[in-house]
Length: 84
Length: 149
Image 1: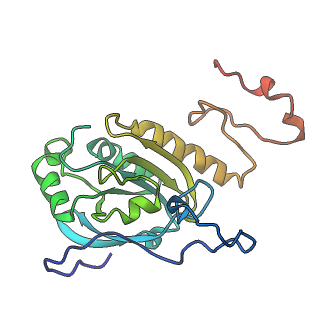
Image 2 (image 1 turned 180 degrees about the horizontal axis):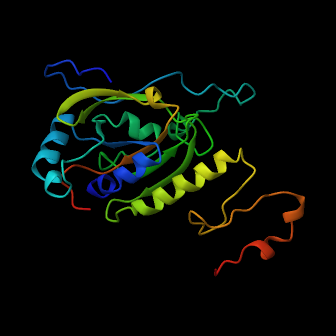
């Protein structure tokens, strides 16, 4: 949980690690669908990522794999200041 | 997010680390926390609010809506091995029921503690009997569990 460098650069979340290995016997003309790429599935390893974050008054950086070893709950939502 | 914050202590007691993610910047997260959420939750949001402005994380989790440029209400439970055990995705107008997330975590923890020897039937709540899958249970679930009890 390193401190976020101060500055005005537009920072965003980034997925970490290698892309899913190609299936060796797949037809060579097979174009994997975009959503095949590292899409989270139950029973499989969660895609690792890091992202800038706000946490209790500070700006920090979170890397998911730093928390492996614990149970983790991730909640995506449409946007701040929305109503639900 | 205030609904998740409201259950945060319960989740912490279960050893769960919580992260929220949206396409807003971490600066906007601070403003939302300071100006609105602190009025709904004492002390404000107690967990990390992550920023995914480019939608990269949302795409990896299959919840980024390219047309609207937002992230759907995706909820993921990840076990200590880093394996996704449960996911739920809702379109924006309907909110989650966090109590159900808590129940699922409790169920997955029971299964994990048993090394996979136990399973929780539909509607299982903490304290309810669990099932022990094996040859003796085949055709005999009705003796152990009924859907309306």
